[in-house]
Length: 385
Image (cartoon, rainbow, N blue to C red; front, side):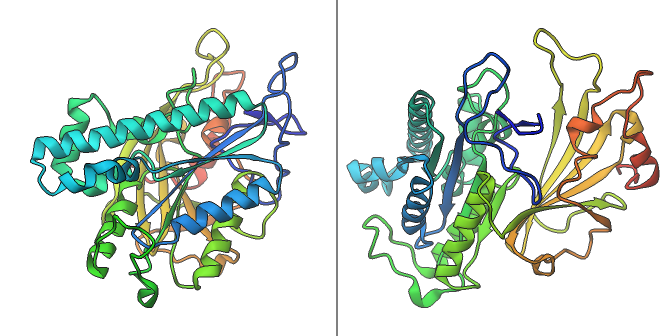
Protein backbone atom coordinates (compact mmCIF):
# COMPACT_ATOMS: atom_id res chain seq x y z
CA UNK A 1 0.00 0.00 0.00
CA UNK A 2 1.27 3.51 -0.77
CA UNK A 3 0.05 7.07 -0.34
CA UNK A 4 -1.13 9.07 -3.32
CA UNK A 5 -0.29 12.76 -3.72
CA UNK A 6 -3.66 13.82 -2.28
CA UNK A 7 -3.35 11.60 0.78
CA UNK A 8 -5.50 8.77 -0.61
CA UNK A 9 -4.34 5.31 0.36
CA UNK A 10 -3.58 2.97 -2.52
CA UNK A 11 -3.58 -0.78 -2.02
CA UNK A 12 -2.28 -3.49 -4.31
CA UNK A 13 -5.76 -4.79 -5.05
CA UNK A 14 -6.90 -1.44 -6.43
CA UNK A 15 -5.73 -0.04 -9.76
CA UNK A 16 -6.01 3.69 -10.45
CA UNK A 17 -9.10 4.57 -12.47
CA UNK A 18 -9.05 6.65 -15.62
CA UNK A 19 -8.59 10.29 -14.70
CA UNK A 20 -6.90 9.53 -11.38
CA UNK A 21 -3.23 10.12 -10.80
CA UNK A 22 -1.30 6.84 -10.55
CA UNK A 23 0.34 6.08 -7.22
CA UNK A 24 4.01 7.00 -6.96
CA UNK A 25 6.39 4.06 -7.17
CA UNK A 26 8.11 5.02 -3.93
CA UNK A 27 6.13 6.88 -1.28
CA UNK A 28 5.58 6.75 2.46
CA UNK A 29 2.97 4.37 3.83
CA UNK A 30 2.67 6.34 7.07
CA UNK A 31 4.54 9.32 8.39
CA UNK A 32 7.71 8.15 10.05
CA UNK A 33 7.88 4.86 8.19
CA UNK A 34 10.39 4.09 5.51
CA UNK A 35 9.35 4.12 1.88
CA UNK A 36 7.80 0.84 0.78
CA UNK A 37 8.08 0.05 -2.94
CA UNK A 38 5.03 -1.62 -4.50
CA UNK A 39 4.96 -5.26 -5.60
CA UNK A 40 2.56 -6.14 -8.41
CA UNK A 41 1.87 -9.85 -8.82
CA UNK A 42 0.08 -11.21 -11.90
CA UNK A 43 -0.90 -14.65 -13.20
CA UNK A 44 -0.56 -15.53 -16.86
CA UNK A 45 -2.68 -18.52 -17.71
CA UNK A 46 -4.69 -19.99 -20.56
CA UNK A 47 -4.98 -22.97 -22.85
CA UNK A 48 -2.23 -24.62 -24.91
CA UNK A 49 -0.53 -22.45 -27.54
CA UNK A 50 -2.07 -19.23 -26.27
CA UNK A 51 1.04 -17.04 -26.34
CA UNK A 52 1.98 -17.37 -22.68
CA UNK A 53 5.73 -17.66 -23.30
CA UNK A 54 5.73 -14.61 -25.58
CA UNK A 55 3.59 -12.72 -23.06
CA UNK A 56 6.04 -13.35 -20.24
CA UNK A 57 8.86 -12.05 -22.41
CA UNK A 58 6.93 -8.95 -23.56
CA UNK A 59 5.80 -8.02 -20.06
CA UNK A 60 9.25 -8.63 -18.57
CA UNK A 61 10.89 -6.34 -21.13
CA UNK A 62 8.19 -3.67 -20.78
CA UNK A 63 8.45 -3.39 -17.00
CA UNK A 64 12.26 -3.68 -16.83
CA UNK A 65 12.53 -0.81 -19.31
CA UNK A 66 10.45 1.28 -16.89
CA UNK A 67 12.54 0.66 -13.81
CA UNK A 68 10.80 -2.34 -12.25
CA UNK A 69 12.61 -5.40 -11.04
CA UNK A 70 10.83 -8.33 -12.69
CA UNK A 71 10.58 -11.87 -11.34
CA UNK A 72 9.10 -14.77 -13.32
CA UNK A 73 7.72 -17.65 -11.26
CA UNK A 74 8.13 -20.84 -13.34
CA UNK A 75 5.20 -23.18 -13.93
CA UNK A 76 5.19 -25.80 -11.18
CA UNK A 77 3.53 -28.45 -13.34
CA UNK A 78 6.18 -28.12 -16.04
CA UNK A 79 8.98 -28.42 -13.49
CA UNK A 80 7.55 -31.71 -12.22
CA UNK A 81 6.64 -33.09 -15.63
CA UNK A 82 10.00 -32.36 -17.25
CA UNK A 83 11.55 -34.01 -14.20
CA UNK A 84 9.79 -37.28 -15.01
CA UNK A 85 6.33 -37.02 -13.45
CA UNK A 86 4.71 -36.60 -16.87
CA UNK A 87 5.62 -40.09 -17.98
CA UNK A 88 3.93 -41.64 -14.95
CA UNK A 89 0.76 -39.54 -15.14
CA UNK A 90 -1.15 -41.87 -17.49
CA UNK A 91 -0.73 -44.73 -15.01
CA UNK A 92 -1.92 -42.86 -11.93
CA UNK A 93 -4.91 -44.01 -9.91
CA UNK A 94 -7.27 -41.44 -8.40
CA UNK A 95 -5.37 -41.19 -5.12
CA UNK A 96 -2.17 -40.66 -7.11
CA UNK A 97 -3.81 -37.94 -9.22
CA UNK A 98 -4.82 -36.14 -6.04
CA UNK A 99 -1.29 -36.39 -4.67
CA UNK A 100 0.23 -35.26 -7.98
CA UNK A 101 -2.02 -32.18 -8.12
CA UNK A 102 -1.36 -31.44 -4.45
CA UNK A 103 2.39 -31.51 -5.11
CA UNK A 104 1.89 -29.08 -8.01
CA UNK A 105 -0.21 -26.76 -5.85
CA UNK A 106 2.19 -26.93 -2.91
CA UNK A 107 5.19 -26.26 -5.16
CA UNK A 108 3.37 -23.39 -6.88
CA UNK A 109 2.65 -21.67 -3.56
CA UNK A 110 6.19 -22.25 -2.32
CA UNK A 111 7.71 -20.77 -5.48
CA UNK A 112 5.42 -17.75 -5.31
CA UNK A 113 6.22 -17.15 -1.65
CA UNK A 114 9.96 -17.38 -2.33
CA UNK A 115 9.85 -14.86 -5.17
CA UNK A 116 7.61 -12.54 -3.16
CA UNK A 117 10.08 -12.62 -0.27
CA UNK A 118 12.93 -11.78 -2.65
CA UNK A 119 10.90 -8.91 -4.07
CA UNK A 120 10.23 -7.55 -0.59
CA UNK A 121 13.94 -7.60 0.22
CA UNK A 122 14.96 -5.93 -3.05
CA UNK A 123 13.94 -2.44 -1.95
CA UNK A 124 12.74 -1.73 -5.49
CA UNK A 125 9.37 -1.57 -7.23
CA UNK A 126 8.74 -5.10 -8.47
CA UNK A 127 6.53 -7.03 -10.83
CA UNK A 128 6.07 -10.77 -10.25
CA UNK A 129 4.79 -12.71 -13.26
CA UNK A 130 3.46 -16.16 -12.38
CA UNK A 131 3.45 -18.79 -15.12
CA UNK A 132 0.04 -20.13 -14.07
CA UNK A 133 -1.42 -19.87 -10.58
CA UNK A 134 -2.92 -21.86 -7.75
CA UNK A 135 -6.31 -22.44 -9.39
CA UNK A 136 -5.03 -23.89 -12.66
CA UNK A 137 -4.74 -27.42 -11.34
CA UNK A 138 -8.50 -27.63 -10.83
CA UNK A 139 -8.91 -27.56 -14.63
CA UNK A 140 -7.12 -30.91 -14.85
CA UNK A 141 -9.29 -32.63 -12.25
CA UNK A 142 -12.95 -33.51 -11.98
CA UNK A 143 -15.01 -31.24 -9.69
CA UNK A 144 -15.29 -34.08 -7.18
CA UNK A 145 -11.52 -34.60 -7.18
CA UNK A 146 -10.93 -30.89 -6.64
CA UNK A 147 -13.37 -30.82 -3.72
CA UNK A 148 -11.70 -33.89 -2.21
CA UNK A 149 -8.26 -32.29 -2.50
CA UNK A 150 -9.46 -29.12 -0.77
CA UNK A 151 -11.14 -31.12 1.98
CA UNK A 152 -8.06 -33.27 2.57
CA UNK A 153 -5.78 -30.25 2.93
CA UNK A 154 -8.26 -27.90 4.65
CA UNK A 155 -8.48 -25.42 1.77
CA UNK A 156 -11.31 -23.29 0.46
CA UNK A 157 -11.49 -21.73 -2.98
CA UNK A 158 -11.87 -18.07 -1.99
CA UNK A 159 -8.99 -18.10 0.50
CA UNK A 160 -6.74 -20.08 -1.83
CA UNK A 161 -7.46 -17.92 -4.87
CA UNK A 162 -7.55 -14.50 -3.24
CA UNK A 163 -5.52 -14.35 -0.04
CA UNK A 164 -1.78 -13.97 0.36
CA UNK A 165 -0.33 -15.88 3.32
CA UNK A 166 2.77 -13.68 3.58
CA UNK A 167 0.98 -10.66 4.96
CA UNK A 168 -0.48 -9.95 8.38
CA UNK A 169 -3.56 -8.31 6.86
CA UNK A 170 -5.78 -9.16 3.91
CA UNK A 171 -4.09 -8.77 0.55
CA UNK A 172 -4.99 -10.25 -2.79
CA UNK A 173 -2.72 -13.15 -3.67
CA UNK A 174 -2.72 -11.86 -7.25
CA UNK A 175 -3.53 -8.33 -8.40
CA UNK A 176 -4.96 -9.67 -11.66
CA UNK A 177 -5.39 -12.84 -13.70
CA UNK A 178 -4.56 -12.66 -17.41
CA UNK A 179 -6.17 -15.52 -19.33
CA UNK A 180 -4.83 -15.96 -22.85
CA UNK A 181 -7.22 -17.89 -25.08
CA UNK A 182 -5.67 -20.82 -26.93
CA UNK A 183 -4.96 -20.40 -30.64
CA UNK A 184 -7.20 -23.45 -31.08
CA UNK A 185 -10.13 -21.08 -30.45
CA UNK A 186 -10.15 -18.36 -33.08
CA UNK A 187 -6.68 -18.75 -34.58
CA UNK A 188 -6.66 -22.43 -35.51
CA UNK A 189 -4.14 -22.08 -38.35
CA UNK A 190 -1.53 -21.02 -35.80
CA UNK A 191 -2.19 -23.83 -33.33
CA UNK A 192 1.01 -25.78 -32.78
CA UNK A 193 2.60 -27.86 -30.04
CA UNK A 194 6.16 -27.60 -31.34
CA UNK A 195 7.29 -25.09 -28.71
CA UNK A 196 6.25 -27.30 -25.79
CA UNK A 197 7.49 -30.88 -25.70
CA UNK A 198 5.04 -31.99 -23.00
CA UNK A 199 1.87 -30.80 -24.78
CA UNK A 200 -0.15 -33.39 -26.69
CA UNK A 201 -3.64 -31.84 -26.94
CA UNK A 202 -5.72 -31.85 -30.11
CA UNK A 203 -7.57 -28.67 -31.12
CA UNK A 204 -10.77 -29.93 -29.47
CA UNK A 205 -8.93 -30.91 -26.30
CA UNK A 206 -7.14 -27.55 -26.21
CA UNK A 207 -10.44 -25.68 -26.40
CA UNK A 208 -11.90 -27.75 -23.59
CA UNK A 209 -8.85 -27.22 -21.35
CA UNK A 210 -8.89 -23.50 -22.12
CA UNK A 211 -12.54 -23.21 -21.09
CA UNK A 212 -11.98 -25.17 -17.86
CA UNK A 213 -8.93 -23.08 -16.98
CA UNK A 214 -10.78 -19.81 -17.51
CA UNK A 215 -13.74 -21.07 -15.48
CA UNK A 216 -11.39 -21.95 -12.60
CA UNK A 217 -10.63 -18.26 -12.09
CA UNK A 218 -14.21 -16.95 -12.13
CA UNK A 219 -14.64 -15.03 -8.89
CA UNK A 220 -11.29 -13.27 -8.86
CA UNK A 221 -12.02 -9.52 -8.80
CA UNK A 222 -9.70 -8.79 -11.72
CA UNK A 223 -9.94 -11.52 -14.34
CA UNK A 224 -9.07 -10.42 -17.88
CA UNK A 225 -9.56 -12.62 -20.95
CA UNK A 226 -7.55 -11.93 -24.09
CA UNK A 227 -9.04 -13.67 -27.12
CA UNK A 228 -7.81 -14.00 -30.69
CA UNK A 229 -10.34 -11.70 -32.35
CA UNK A 230 -7.83 -8.96 -33.14
CA UNK A 231 -4.71 -10.90 -34.17
CA UNK A 232 -1.71 -11.95 -32.11
CA UNK A 233 0.17 -8.63 -31.96
CA UNK A 234 -2.96 -6.78 -30.90
CA UNK A 235 -3.59 -9.48 -28.30
CA UNK A 236 -0.11 -8.88 -26.86
CA UNK A 237 -0.58 -5.10 -26.90
CA UNK A 238 -3.91 -5.34 -25.08
CA UNK A 239 -2.20 -7.47 -22.45
CA UNK A 240 0.70 -5.04 -21.97
CA UNK A 241 -1.63 -2.03 -21.86
CA UNK A 242 -3.86 -3.67 -19.26
CA UNK A 243 -0.92 -4.65 -17.04
CA UNK A 244 0.54 -1.16 -17.39
CA UNK A 245 -2.71 0.47 -16.27
CA UNK A 246 -2.93 -1.78 -13.22
CA UNK A 247 0.58 -0.65 -12.22
CA UNK A 248 -0.25 3.04 -12.59
CA UNK A 249 1.46 3.52 -15.95
CA UNK A 250 -0.58 5.73 -18.33
CA UNK A 251 -2.44 3.79 -21.03
CA UNK A 252 -5.34 4.33 -23.42
CA UNK A 253 -7.03 1.10 -22.35
CA UNK A 254 -9.90 1.50 -19.90
CA UNK A 255 -9.79 -1.89 -18.23
CA UNK A 256 -12.56 -1.60 -15.64
CA UNK A 257 -16.09 -0.21 -15.71
CA UNK A 258 -18.86 -0.12 -13.14
CA UNK A 259 -22.61 0.31 -13.32
CA UNK A 260 -25.49 0.75 -10.90
CA UNK A 261 -28.14 -1.92 -11.44
CA UNK A 262 -31.84 -1.11 -11.20
CA UNK A 263 -32.38 -4.53 -9.64
CA UNK A 264 -30.49 -7.67 -8.78
CA UNK A 265 -30.91 -10.49 -11.31
CA UNK A 266 -32.89 -13.36 -9.80
CA UNK A 267 -31.15 -15.92 -11.98
CA UNK A 268 -27.98 -16.01 -14.08
CA UNK A 269 -28.59 -18.32 -17.06
CA UNK A 270 -25.09 -19.80 -17.28
CA UNK A 271 -22.20 -20.92 -15.09
CA UNK A 272 -21.45 -18.54 -12.26
CA UNK A 273 -19.80 -18.47 -8.86
CA UNK A 274 -21.60 -17.02 -5.83
CA UNK A 275 -20.08 -16.24 -2.47
CA UNK A 276 -20.46 -13.82 0.43
CA UNK A 277 -17.91 -11.27 1.59
CA UNK A 278 -17.69 -9.58 4.97
CA UNK A 279 -15.44 -6.55 5.46
CA UNK A 280 -14.51 -5.15 8.86
CA UNK A 281 -12.49 -1.92 8.87
CA UNK A 282 -9.90 -1.82 11.62
CA UNK A 283 -8.20 0.74 13.80
CA UNK A 284 -4.64 -0.11 14.85
CA UNK A 285 -5.85 -2.09 17.89
CA UNK A 286 -9.44 -3.07 17.15
CA UNK A 287 -12.43 -2.92 14.85
CA UNK A 288 -13.51 0.65 14.10
CA UNK A 289 -16.81 1.66 15.74
CA UNK A 290 -17.22 4.61 13.35
CA UNK A 291 -17.68 2.26 10.40
CA UNK A 292 -20.27 -0.32 9.46
CA UNK A 293 -19.45 -3.96 8.92
CA UNK A 294 -20.01 -4.59 5.22
CA UNK A 295 -21.68 -7.77 3.99
CA UNK A 296 -22.03 -8.43 0.27
CA UNK A 297 -23.25 -11.21 -1.94
CA UNK A 298 -21.05 -11.51 -5.03
CA UNK A 299 -22.10 -13.16 -8.28
CA UNK A 300 -19.32 -13.72 -10.79
CA UNK A 301 -19.52 -14.95 -14.38
CA UNK A 302 -17.98 -14.70 -17.83
CA UNK A 303 -19.84 -13.40 -20.86
CA UNK A 304 -18.21 -13.19 -24.29
CA UNK A 305 -14.72 -13.26 -22.77
CA UNK A 306 -15.53 -10.47 -20.32
CA UNK A 307 -15.47 -10.85 -16.55
CA UNK A 308 -18.56 -9.65 -14.65
CA UNK A 309 -19.02 -9.27 -10.89
CA UNK A 310 -22.24 -8.13 -9.25
CA UNK A 311 -21.78 -6.84 -5.69
CA UNK A 312 -25.08 -6.83 -3.78
CA UNK A 313 -25.03 -5.17 -0.36
CA UNK A 314 -26.78 -7.14 2.40
CA UNK A 315 -25.53 -5.02 5.33
CA UNK A 316 -25.72 -2.31 6.57
CA UNK A 317 -29.50 -2.40 6.37
CA UNK A 318 -29.78 1.12 4.94
CA UNK A 319 -28.17 0.01 1.67
CA UNK A 320 -29.43 -3.58 1.55
CA UNK A 321 -30.22 -4.51 -2.04
CA UNK A 322 -27.93 -1.93 -3.61
CA UNK A 323 -26.34 -3.72 -6.59
CA UNK A 324 -23.18 -2.60 -8.39
CA UNK A 325 -21.85 -4.28 -11.53
CA UNK A 326 -18.09 -4.40 -12.19
CA UNK A 327 -16.88 -5.34 -15.67
CA UNK A 328 -13.27 -6.21 -16.50
CA UNK A 329 -12.90 -5.78 -20.27
CA UNK A 330 -9.74 -4.46 -21.87
CA UNK A 331 -10.93 -2.15 -24.64
CA UNK A 332 -10.75 1.54 -25.50
CA UNK A 333 -14.42 2.20 -26.28
CA UNK A 334 -17.53 1.69 -24.17
CA UNK A 335 -19.27 0.37 -27.29
CA UNK A 336 -16.91 -2.62 -27.29
CA UNK A 337 -18.52 -4.07 -24.14
CA UNK A 338 -21.19 -6.70 -24.70
CA UNK A 339 -23.86 -6.76 -22.00
CA UNK A 340 -26.04 -9.82 -21.35
CA UNK A 341 -29.73 -9.08 -21.79
CA UNK A 342 -30.77 -10.18 -18.28
CA UNK A 343 -28.94 -7.24 -16.65
CA UNK A 344 -31.11 -4.23 -15.84
CA UNK A 345 -28.63 -1.35 -15.84
CA UNK A 346 -29.72 1.95 -14.35
CA UNK A 347 -26.61 3.95 -15.22
CA UNK A 348 -22.85 3.78 -15.66
CA UNK A 349 -20.83 5.18 -12.78
CA UNK A 350 -17.81 7.37 -13.59
CA UNK A 351 -14.52 5.59 -13.02
CA UNK A 352 -13.56 8.13 -10.35
CA UNK A 353 -16.87 7.69 -8.46
CA UNK A 354 -16.16 5.76 -5.26
CA UNK A 355 -19.48 6.62 -3.58
CA UNK A 356 -20.72 3.02 -3.62
CA UNK A 357 -17.40 1.41 -2.76
CA UNK A 358 -17.39 -0.75 0.36
CA UNK A 359 -15.00 1.71 2.00
CA UNK A 360 -17.40 4.63 1.59
CA UNK A 361 -20.53 2.62 2.37
CA UNK A 362 -18.92 1.62 5.66
CA UNK A 363 -18.76 5.24 6.85
CA UNK A 364 -21.13 6.39 9.60
CA UNK A 365 -22.37 9.88 10.37
CA UNK A 366 -22.04 11.38 13.84
CA UNK A 367 -25.54 10.04 14.54
CA UNK A 368 -24.44 6.52 13.58
CA UNK A 369 -26.25 6.40 10.25
CA UNK A 370 -24.77 5.22 6.98
CA UNK A 371 -23.52 8.24 5.00
CA UNK A 372 -24.51 6.97 1.55
CA UNK A 373 -27.91 5.53 2.48
CA UNK A 374 -29.64 7.98 0.13
CA UNK A 375 -28.12 6.19 -2.84
CA UNK A 376 -29.90 3.00 -1.90
CA UNK A 377 -33.18 4.82 -1.36
CA UNK A 378 -33.13 6.20 -4.88
CA UNK A 379 -31.42 3.48 -6.92
CA UNK A 380 -30.69 -0.21 -7.14
CA UNK A 381 -32.86 -1.24 -4.16
CA UNK A 382 -34.37 -4.47 -5.43
CA UNK A 383 -34.54 -6.98 -2.59
CA UNK A 384 -32.68 -10.26 -2.87
CA UNK A 385 -34.79 -13.24 -3.83
